[in-house]
Length: 208
Image 1 (tube, rainbow, N blue to C red):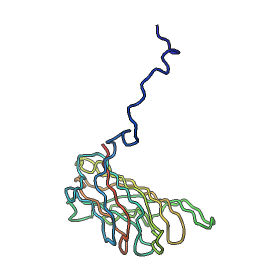
Image 2 (image 1 turned 90 degrees about the vertical axis):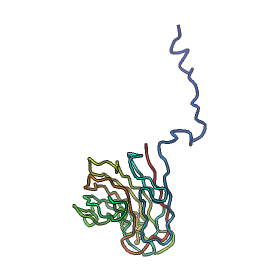
Image 3 (image 1 turned 135 degrees about the horizontal axis):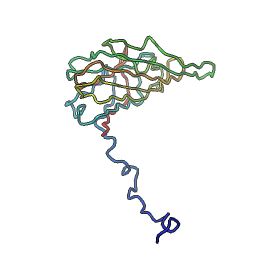
Image 4 (image 1 turned 30 degrees about the horizontal axis):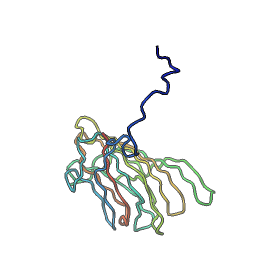
């Protein structure tokens, strides 16, 4: 009779031989956009190969080294329920951050009431005071949107960003909330609160 001692190492090695073959298909790259002094960056379902419908339950936007052409604007987003004709979905949101300066003289964790919304249709900040005065300043992070095509429930989102602020601070910002609509959300737009997005890469992924 086989015993644990005789069989404990008797198992096949996994067939996966590369990182790409481990969990392949869990996250699918849908669309990548490189900014070049753009006033807005939009992902609209059915336009330019964008998928933002019931194909996936979860969508993730990864924003890489987003650099404004002005110094200190907020990086914001909004939702559309009419294929990008209007970005004005009513939202209730929260916003808080942790920060630390390069001089190691100032640290804090705080809630920022100026960056939240209460049943408002404006653009939601997801990174504030983004440095753009010199070439290496930027923000990077991700926005998660859950089940946007559902027509029963409201539309939850969460975001986390790190920002090189105008005053040589690092800001780790957290925003979350919901679009208060049971209509399908089929487009997302990003923009700076003032000026343009000079450079940066935006990637949209779907998660099965």
